[in-house]
Image 1 (tube, helix red, strand yellow):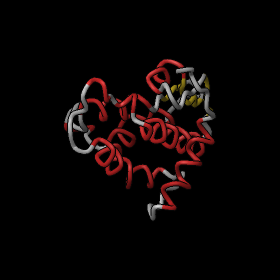
Image 2 (tube, helix red, strand yellow):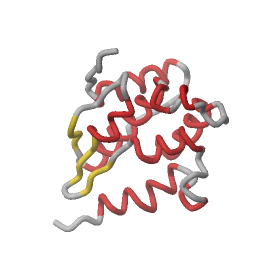
Image 3 (tube, helix red, strand yellow):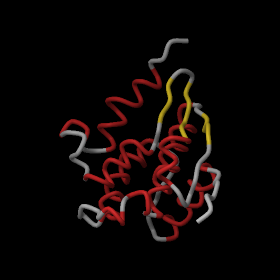
Length: 147
């Protein structure tokens, strides 16, 4: 299968339209990430540990969630995407795609991929929800940068 480059901004927008058509009011806001990310991860995981041949990196919704998360933070905190983003080979995105905010680099695949692969408790109880991860680690790192 040939690698398919995708614009993560477009991928995120398409995902939001798809979810709104299903009656889920996603938006490019941090509150929307807080409200929906954990629910969507649990829904797409099915509550079960994924088998190796059905890993998070083979899940179509995995790239949609990472694009939505990255684009939401980019829009909210004036970041920009850097690198290549693949819709059909999302395992590569961890290495090739990030959102940059001055001196801080956010890799949307990190927390989301860990949750898909190992469940939301894999990062420890303190970071079990996306809201706790963003509010305690990511957002402070973005807004408290020097300069």
